Length: 248
Ligand code: SAH
Image 1 (cartoon, rainbow, N blue to C red):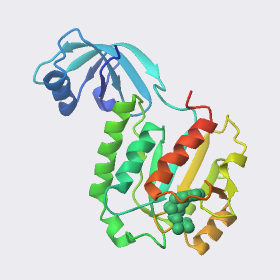
Image 2: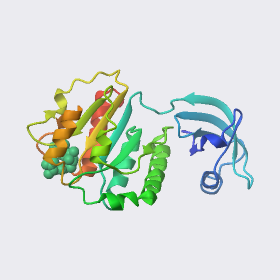
Image 3: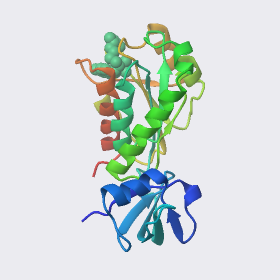
């Protein structure tokens, strides 16, 4: 049987022992009814997992004695960033949930010209980032990986382009004939970083596309059917992970 999995931030972890945070402790004892001696897996949100044994279940939280440490537990070799048009409501939550399961390391909510969410509203979105972080944490445990994806504060499209990383593969997804079918892309499986850019429901403006291409992004198409933004995000992550040999 698979070991139950918990999250503990690095501050709760010493060489020998881990103290599970309050919520995780409650889950361990209240919901899963784990007792002293039970074996568990703990991830630190930074790419490491620990196999260990519950030693105490007292009010100060569940203490786990570390048996072994596993580096890069459940993590893909490639660092995948998904930047996507920020939307109102819970669509971005879906994108974060599915993207986390697929191995995304960083999410960037992007405000574009045709975004329904405007920058002023997005700036007040601190609480949304906190919510997205909770979504990512739940997804991380569910899919058994150890890196807690970073959720950036919302950025304007142009500010995001300023982060351009010339050593990464940078793809912008856009339907139409001017983009290359994903199938034609020859991916080097040793690539360290890939940045994916997906538009909002109304797509990118011609000016945005032009600037992105000038910056160095390659335009990629997924064929003639138009996917909703919250479908496109997880789909491009899955396809890229497949092409990188990560879905084996
Ligand atoms: N009418 C818009 C469609 C937006 S769909 C347009 O013409 O751009 C929302 C986003 O999902 C797009 O900006 C794009 O990033 C992605 N997307 C959806 N379907 C796609 C396809 N067939 N090829 C490439 N990208 C696609």
